[in-house]
Image (cartoon, rainbow, N blue to C red; front, side, top):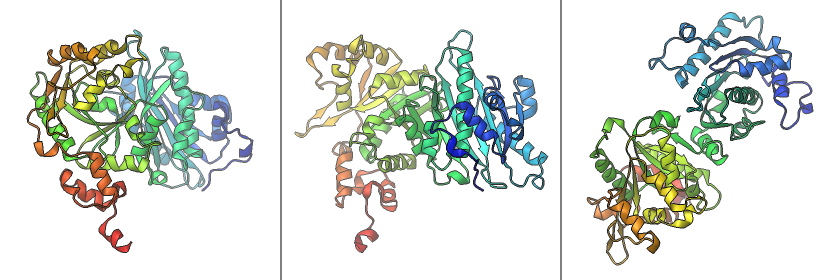
Length: 483
């Protein structure tokens, strides 16, 4: 059933929040519950104020007291309230109540929904700005399976009242977009910021599910969050699902490997494995508390011009297939990456990188926008409990470049020596000499040119996956024969 409303053409391209709420309210088929915890009933307030809500709102509730909330939705295993698990319980509980209490015989054309949020606004000391989970579970046709849009937000404003108002606007945009923009999920994503600025709120995780979104790849939606400036970094797990960065990184020892991974090669894996083994030997680093991140920067994705989303998905599939957690970030400089991680963990961290990346770190041109220049950046980078694991480079004449003989700008020599001899930069010595001549760009060109012999340069199973799924433009033997 198409959800329509007489007079739709009268609405502006970017309708006001009141207009959006009114359009939902005046649709005689839309009917559901608003359940909001932690910041008042800011979203449903917009629908009440717009008028005509009596036929739309089944119930509005805020189980604000923790004991009462537990009595309604149950107790979480981790005893926390601002979690995705809590939000999901709210969505399922309230939807079931609607189904149980409203007769389909009496209301055959109704489409049900539950909007929910569970948030924590800024604390009194203004140390923690607050965050929350927001979601909607809904139908667009009676008796249809339910669809879900679930997202995580981080507040950026420094006033609780402003955060509440922002939440109300975002929630209204979500309800409106869910019903009227569901066939354009990328636009729906952008419309969440109607009448909001990105300085007010950050969306760092979003997942679409249900029959409406069966063709939506949530990893691509994650990429949109970074491309649109809605967040600086997103993550997805080896199973391909988007995950909350805070959940992955909280109080962890973090080892990061940055690269193009186009495709991931044996040299990438040797760099990771050797750095990982060295990292585990550090004080206060335990395997069960260590998280490895394979990071791709947005600037890397743009290296060939506009971002090729298929190319991005090819890289993501391969990294996930070998069991890695992938991060897409907007951090061109390493110190920004370390600052980001430091939001979630104060534990020891490691960066595994090649010689060229380390040389770039000591290039002043990357820090001209900082009032303190390179010294300010290095204060942020190496002040943390961090160590660089340097993978050597094999030169054309067969010699090896490592931390002992790499060349930085003459003005940077003493600065480099300071960090090198204070143990902040250590060499990976037990590297596999057979992998040093492997380069992703060489493998990619061989794949694109249809040349043989690239398969042994990749980790086990990766070449087969590239062929089976025709990744990076690889043509299977069947395709070549038909050609």
